[in-house]
Structures are given as structure tokens and as C-alpha cells.
Amino acid sequence: MASVNSLPCEEQFLCSICLDAFTEPVSTPCGHNYCKTCITGYWASSDLTQCPLCKEKFHHRPELQVNTEFRDMVEHFKKMRVRSEDEVLAKPGEVSCDVCHGLKLKAQKTCLVCLASYCQPHLEPHQRVPTLKKHKLIDPVSNLEDRVCKRHDKMFELFCPTDQTCVCFMCLKDNHATHKAIPLEHVFRERKAHLENVTSEMKMIEVTKTRSIKEIRYSVEQNRKESEKEIQDINEIFAALVASLQRSRVNLIELIQEKREAAKEKAEDHVAQLKQEVDELRRRRSKIEQVLQTEDDFHLLQNWPSLYFPSHNKDPFHLLSCSTPPFTQDLPDSSQQSYVGMVKKAVAQMEKTLSNEMEVLIHGVRLSDGCESAKQPDAAEKLVTDELIKEVWNPPEDELRMIQQCHAVDVTLDAYTANSKLLVSEDGKQLTIQQGRMQQFFNSLNVFGRRFEYQPYVLGKEAFSSGRFYYEVRVSGSRGWLLGVVKESIKNEFNPNLSEHGWSFSGIHFQREDFAHSSVHSINSGPMRLRQRPQTVGVFGDYEKGEISFYDVDARTLIYSYTGCVFTETTPALKAFLYSLTDSPLSGRLKLYPIFGIFGEEPDNVLVITPVGRAT
Image 1 (cartoon, rainbow, N blue to C red):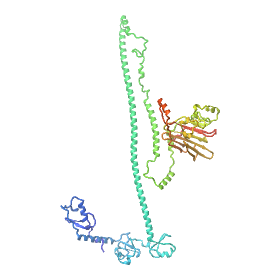
Image 2 (spheres, one colour):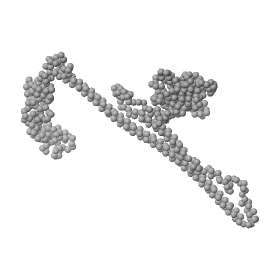
Image 3 (cartoon, rainbow, N blue to C red):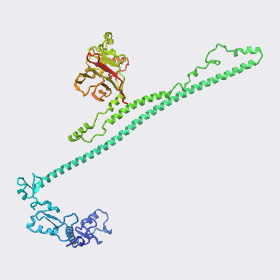
Image 4 (cartoon, rainbow, N blue to C red):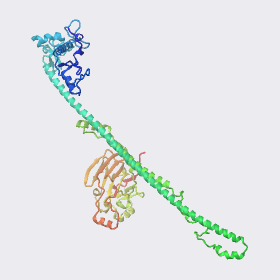
């Protein structure tokens, strides 16, 4: 029996180009052998015609002929190699031939009828004898005893769906007599088809998830590039801001230096003038001293007119004036002009403004989702995501805290606009139901015609036409209340409709029920039930964004928010014409006034404008 060790040297029958057994072997003039296809392809891909092994060059491409005898040897070698591969000794863990004695060869097939495994030589009868050809052969298996019914010593050829187990024909007469059996081949095809479908679905899922991975990575890369670009733009913006501050600093320093140089030149002019006056005084004093040294009375009297200076001459600019010239008082005094204090005050104000704006900006960036998914999630993923968000997400408290820190304003009540039934405290912070007749008499005067006659409302003194504002009102002392902001045009209405002039939020409290009602213009959103009665309500307005929001300060939650509000108006043509005649500035931006109201007749109803609770 041939084995691998009895074969000729394998390298002798291998082409040095393809490293496989020769196919149509040819010989070059130098005596080396190659596959005809390999050597012709090698020469076609090279500019030189030479032997790949010895590098011998040929002036002309040789005419190659197939070496038939060598080809037959190669074919014989291939057959021997195939035969030798089939007759390999079984290694540990491999299925061995059940017929071999002594050294057992590796089994090539297992017969389910004979219940034995055979090597290639012993398998030959099953490939030759017609009766044995009908036996079912499978790839070699080592657990043939598991395929045999231990009770009847028969092969499992059927499957019982009831018990989900393999059975033999004899089992159908015993334990499975009432069960329906299916041939194993049918179950095999059915479950194989099912597994193929599962495999196909798994491949589709793999493809989908692989594509999602690529898309996510692409999205992350795009986000990285965009973030780098944004960071670069932000650096440029801050660099421009720093450069602008540097230019302002340089301009301020240059201005101070110019003022210093001007003061220096002025002082030098004054010094030069004083030196001339001093020289003149010295000259006259010397002349007087010379006259005083003589005893000649005639000489003294003769020079007296040129030496005499009346004592009543008090001209401050006269040469003999003893008073300090007034220009010395005009010289700059560095101790009186504190440019450093002015700069410190301005820089502190800028720093505070920038700090507040940057805190709002950073908080907005922190709350925003800067990474968008490459595609919309499917329904199942979205459901899981939504449930996860409901479980782990809570509304952040920082948003209201940031508003309290950065946009708080001081609001007071305007008593001249209050309804006659309402009483405004002296400090303008408290609103109650009117009790005294004297106060009611003064209220009935309706100063300037600005008072609410039919609605229990009062306006705030402060008006807002830009930026953001926020204030808080304690409503726990009133069973019925109203808060909001209104347009300035409400003052011109005799019986104004609040929904047409503003944005409000009202609450009515009963003994067993809390609910809030809101309206915006002609749109009525109906009553909204709240989990708890608000004790303090915060009112926030963003003029530029067109938004009015109401917060429950104690619960730190948003109650209701109006968005898309329009705070501008079209100026009438007559008004615009009159403004143009007087060269007065004309603006289409409306002034917004806070509005407050109390419902009911209870004397203990009260609204209090409280200081904004800044977070520590």
C-alpha cells in the first residue's frame, strides 16, 4: 500500500512559477520545465525573454512543445498523490476505518445501513457492488451508537413531532403507537430550510448593522469635522473680540497719552512765560536796588515814574502780581482724574454681561444634542429609546436657575392703572382687594384715563421692548389670579379684550380641585389640570425669540409657554408722517407691560411680587 513517504520527491513535479503540479509541461532551451501557460504568461508580462530560474536570455522566443512523457509522469504522480491522501492514518480525534486491522486508516465514508465507517480501499465494494450501492453513505461520524435505537437496535429513520425525538420503525408499535411520525429526511429538509431562512435573515441583519456602523462612524467623523470647524470659528470670534478689546485698550492709552502730552506742552508754555516774568522782575529789582544805593535825591525822583507800581494793581496777569496765575489751576491733576477707576468699572460691567451670556450659552450647548443620527430609527428602536428616555430623563433644574440668575428684573405695580376694586401697596409690590372708601374715591378719579374700569387688573410700571426679562409672583394667597404681559396698545382701549392684547396665564383654586386656564389671542387651549397648586409663579419673556413662559418656581417645572409671539406692529401712515416732521425716531417694536389680576371678593386675596430666588 502506497503512502506519502513512498512517493517521488514532490518538488520535482511542481512548476516553479505556479508552485503546483505541472499542467502541459514544456522545457526551455536551458533545460528547465514549466507549465506552458505559466511560461508564456511570464514572457508576455516581461520585456525580456529569459528563464525565470537561471535568468538565461534568449534572442528569440523559443517554440515550446509539450513533453508528453514528462506529462504522463506528472499525471501518474497526481493519481498517486490523491490515492495517498485517501490512505492516511487516522489521527487522534478523527474517525478511523472499522475494517482495518492493526494501523487504522482515516475513514472516508460511514454507511448507515452497515453501521460502519470505511477507508478508501475498504469502501470500494460499496462503489462497485450494485446491492451495496443502495446503502446510504454520509461523511464519517464517530457516534453511530447515538443513531441506533437502544431498545430495538434499529437505526433512527423517523421523527416524532409529539415528543420531539427520533424513533425507529419498531418504536411506532410501542411507545409511539398513537403518534404521527415523519421521515427524518422531511424533518431535515424542513429544518434546514428554516435554518437557511434564519441564516439569510441574520445575514441581512449583519448587513444592516454593518451599514449602520459605517453610517454612525461617518456621522461621527462628520460631526468631528464640523466640531473642529465650529471650534475654529469660535476661536476666530473670540480672537476678534480680544483684538477689538486690544484696539480699544490701545486707543484709550493713546488718548490718555495725547492728553498728557497736551498738558505737558501747556505746562511748558506756562513755565516759559513765568521764566520771562521772573527775569523781568529780577531786572527791575536790580535797577531799583541800584537807585536805592545812591544818595542823590534828584536821581531817585527822576527815575521814580519808571520804578513806581501802584499798590492797588491786582491784575492777576500783571508782572508784579503776587497771586498764583490761574492757569496753574487748570493743569491736570492725576490724583483727581482716576482713569483706572473708570476702566475698572467698565471692564467689570462687560465681564458681568459676558459672563451671564456665556453661562446661558454653555447651558444651552450642554442641554442640546450635538450628535444627530445618520438615519431615523425604526419603530422598535424608537419605542425602546422612548421608554428608556421616560425612565432615566428628568427635566433639568438648571434651566430655570439660569433664567433666575441672568434675567431677573425688578417689577412694581402701577397704582394709576389699577381697577377701583384693587389696592396697591405703597412699595408697589402687593395687590389686594379694596376695602376703604377713601381709597376707592381717589381711585374713581381715573387719573389720565388709564385705569381698568371693568376688569380687576393692574399694569406694571416697567415696560420691555427688547432682550429677556423674568420676575416672580407669589399666588398662594389668592384663590383666583391672573399673570401675563400685554401690549402697550391696551391702554387705549375702553374695555380691552385681554386675549387680543397680550399673553396671560390664570389660575382658579377650589377646595378640592386645582386647575389652570390659558388663552392666547383668539385661541383657547382650554383648562389644564396641574398635579399641584403653584405657590409662586415665574414669568419669563424673550422679546427677540417671541416667547412668553410661566414656571412653577417651587416645582421648578414649565407650566405653559407661548411661542411665535409677534411683538412688532405696523406704524400708521399719519403717525409716521408726524414723526418725520419732528425728526423723532420711529420704532415698530411694541412695549410689553406686566399685568396682574385678582378674581373674587374675598378680602384676604393677595398677590405679592417677590424677589427672584437666586440659586446659590
